[in-house]
Amino acid sequence: MADSSFDIMCKIDAPEVLNAVMQAEKEVTHRFDLKDSNSKIDFNQDANEINFTSNEEYQLTAVKDIFKQKLLARKIMPKVLSFEKMEDALGSTKKQKAKLQAGIPQENAKEIVKDIKSEKFKVQASIQGDSIRITGKKKDDLQAVMTYLREKDYGIHMQFGNYR
Image (cartoon, rainbow, N blue to C red):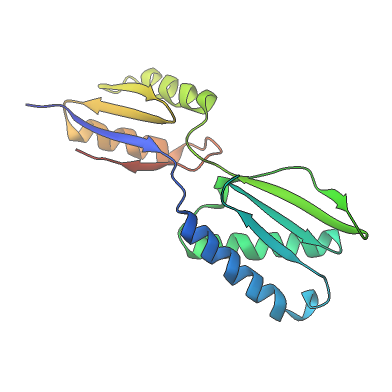
């Protein structure tokens, strides 16, 4: 019997993020408390980052919360965003950058593999670039690993794919 396998990865659907940005911008322009706040959300697909700007810190926080809600509505977890420090911009405005996670970082991948091995699952885990391949003889073992990983929080967005 051939081995079964699946991949743990993080792939972001850029058109879905763009749609979330457009919907969030639309809501920001229609919200009464954000009408004159000069709030903007800019998505730079090449750099995989989103720039938030607004007049006040609380307004900036509200804009980020709206954007996170729009991401959730499109089945993208807000964990894919890693926010940088909020800073002052021109004209007494506030701005903040958020990077989109692309792939599983190496240190997180090592931690995931170590946890899988420490739990003594009857599977093999190998890091392949920015994803992790899990192989095993029984599909039940693979399902157990998936369940185990869903319960743990590594602070990153994980997807399971290529299940064979």
